[in-house]
Image: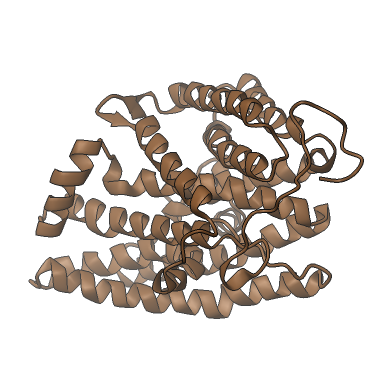
Length: 386
């Protein structure tokens, strides 16, 4: 924390930085990076196994075993899909707050834009291509043919506040959540060095204001959904502020309770059915937060698993491409062949791995490299979040 930070019981000097491990050097969080890879794999499982099997009315022994002995006993919903997304949000709140401490405002928002948008455009175009090849071309939100406006809004994530709403890439809603958090961090960034104890409460107040002003009226409904998920990223942020000694634990705990309450209020207004005992988003989020905390506490004490690092580096690209490509291929194989699902899944995963590598090598890495070239003074790598 900077020297001009005001004295406060909630703000103390960041005298001991987090452990630095792995490929990123100082400031790189190896275990959190790997946890991000696990989160991506959980979402892939949810879509290409859980969702597909249910939609196709098919069965698969590994899925039945996981459902019987893990999902049902622990009340896991959506075949670990929401669990993986919650992990993404906690990790993002942590590492993005870290990035904000090391970057100027212009550098911060530029790198986030370069991180999010080039791979997003690639994935939207891929989704359009898959839809065309499989004979089910995407349509506008009003049921007509896609327009240039539809493409532009999907490329920019503005489709989530536009009417009629056109969704080409189904997983992109989480990116709208991320961008909401990035913009809030960008606007409130000056609080980090001066008054870090005000940062999280300020974000929560803004979330509540958005709800109070907007209500549930369209076309702002999905904006409310995305902003309503931001309190989960705040929990990751609070964890970072405690670990770096910018915030005392008891203050962060109070803020964490407030963030949880705000999130539950948002969920009650948006998705009340996801608060039911037998379909509980909060229960799954608590499990995910516990695993996130374990990874934070174990950082620097547990050696990262190298094969998982390969997945972690590609987790954003994998997250973007797996649904349109994977579900498209599985749908064709299911309709036109009589192959066992194990073989269909293996073929699909190979194709998804190839598309992931293309996106990572030719879109994601170059866009990140551009960000580093634009701001050459920053040499310490920070793991980007999805």
